[in-house]
Amino acid sequence: MDAEEIQLKTRHVLAGGSTRSCLFNANPLRAPGPLKRWIALRFCQLVKREVEYIALTRDTTESDLKQRREILDGSVIFKDQAAVRAALEGKVLIIDGMEKCERNVLPVLNNLLENREMHLEDGRFLVSPKRYAHLLKDHTKEKLNELGLVAVHEDFLVIAIGLPVRKQPRFGKLTS
Image (tube, rainbow, N blue to C red; front, top):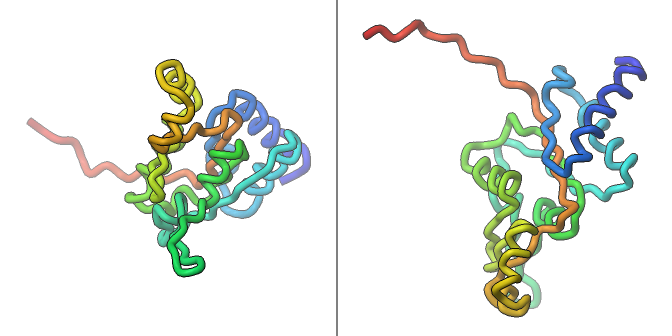
């Protein structure tokens, strides 16, 4: 791939990133390899944004995305993982290997991407910034904190990298 084509792909990512939505980088580059990740990281460099990175595998679990339980000085604490840190701090979350993700992890990712919501093991609940602002009209910030509701940062952005999945062949038409 030449420099002009890489520049074109980076512009494509930049155009999508300006909408503050989630980007799925599958179609621009069909071949596996590090180039998609490089373009996503280059995008973050150009817009001067911090990055959290997750490489999904078949063994990735919900706790790899949310929180890990650790023992510190004889007590259990929960450590936020990359997806939670990115959501709370307004970083760019790069999720690599979407095609490898197991079915039980997809609903967690989907809820974070579409609704900006996630239930955490320590009792907190991530809420979209719009919904949190709406709740602030009826409740105080202290009450929302007491309930464990935490707003996702408005600058939170997700770039998901994956390979396109081939269409499965059809096995004939159903007849009536």
